Length: 125
Image (cartoon, rainbow, N blue to C red; front, top):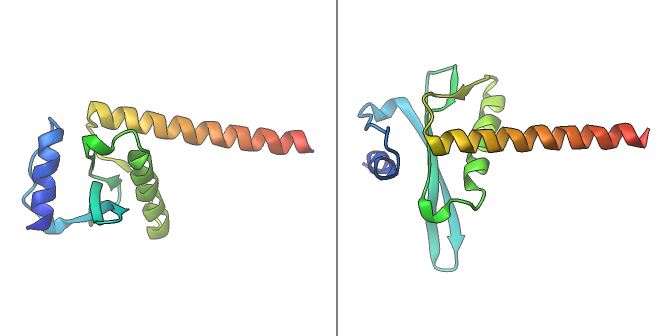
């Protein structure tokens, strides 16, 4: 029931989202923010249990939490899980407009950090 409700929440914010009723075939990872009065959901991502090609099936960050870096954190976490599992993967397509912007921003940040880090190492030599 909990994961089904997560899908209904995502449906409210993602135009292309359809409700998948084979939920036992998915893992769900929920990101919560801890506050003084409890834990509050910021977003989640899901991925298929037996799919080796995709590290992420659906990603959703609540509109009130967008812009706080939660989306990039979730993407990074999904890639970290894939590394631990010994698999490579990409997100399922098609991505929503916001999902596409998130991935472009994430990979731009990763590439620039790599280039800056390696450039500083070369300058030190």
